[in-house]
Every structure is written in structure tokens, then in C-alpha cells.
Length: 141
Image 1 (cartoon, helix red, strand yellow):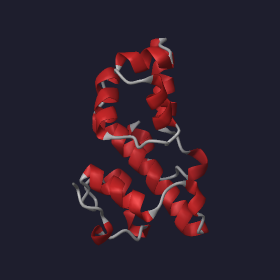
Image 2 (spheres, helix red, strand yellow):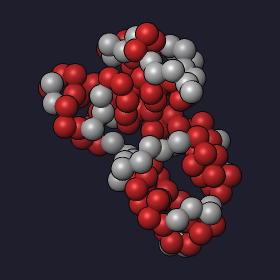
Image 3 (cartoon, one colour):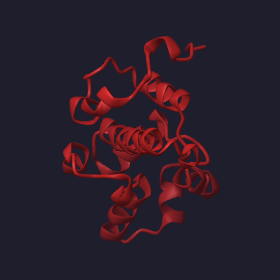
């Protein structure tokens, strides 16, 4: 997981989603997705919504995943952030807004993580190409 975060060769063509990491863990543990959802006390439909990006992966889920898989919660957040940044950068290059990320959602993600440029260097060293200023960030209310 750490290697994925630090790998600068990863592009939108070979993104490894949170769901992909979870599937690998569950395979090793011989647990199905439904049992996993039950163990972390989340409805399977909500877990599927997180996998499909219908709802946002959040710190609460990162803590649950971290606890269950004995991994640091921030790694899960860094993976999600890296993937969001890659998608945003592709949108910026291709001017294709259908990839699901916008400047505001990128800023919300940074705000959620409490990021000051470079705080999570391996992931956020890529921020140089993103035109997201802290003035655009939504208020935390």
C-alpha cells in the first residue's frame, strides 16, 4: 500500500482503488465482502456505494478499515487522495469533467484531510499541477 502511494508511475489507467486493496485483504483472510461489512458494522449497500464512489470514502471508514486490517488509517486516506488527484489531473489535461472529480471535490478532500501543501508528501507532491487554492475550500460547518 505504501509503495502504491509513493509510486509516481501510477496513472488513471492503472489506478488501484480502495476496493481492490480490500479484495486482496479479504482473499488472504478468506472472508467475503458481506461478512467484512458485518464485521466493520456497515450495511453492505453502503459499502458498495463507497466502492462505486457514490458516497465519499471518509475518515470513519479509514479508521474501521485500519482497525480491521491492522493498517494505519491514514494509508487508506492517502490512497483515496492519490486516486482523486490522478483523476483530477487527467480531467485538467483532457478538459473531461465526466471523470467524477471537480476542483471543489478535490478541495473538499484536501480540507477533510487537513492538508497543508506537502503534509503527506508522497501523495501531495503532485499538487503542484492542481489549481486549487485554499480560498476555494468550503467552510467546515
